Image (cartoon, rainbow, N blue to C red; front, top):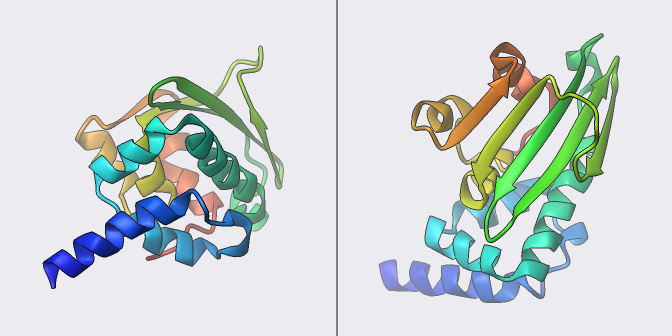
Length: 161
C-alpha cells in the first residue's frame, strides 16, 4: 500500500506540469499538496516555469478567497517572500474590504513581511500547515506586525484537505 501511495505521489509530481490549475478547486489543490513530500515540492520548485505557474495560480486565487467581512476596515500591505532557486516576491494589499495582489516588490513599506521556502508556502496556503507551527519551527519568518500576521488566516477562505 505504501508503494502505491508513493507511486501516486510521483504521478502527482509528473502530472502537475500538465495540470490545468484553473480547473481544479482549492480543495483539490489542497489534497494534491497534502500528498506531496517536501522533497517532491522542492523538485517542482526546481522547474522554474512550473514554479511560476503554481505561484501565479495561488496568488491569483487569493483575491477570490478573500473574506471582506472578516477583514473589515483593516489596511495593510503584506509582502510575501518565497525562497526557492530564486526569491519570488508578491504583495497583498488589504484595504477596507478589498484585496489586491501584485507580483513583485513595490516601493511601499509593508506592514508585515512573511518569508518562507516553497514547501512551507504551499503547505501554508493549502491549509496543510499551521502558521503558528511554521513560525515556532522557524520555517516561517515574520518581519513587522506579528499580530497582523497571526490573524491573516481569518481574512481568507483557506481550503482543508
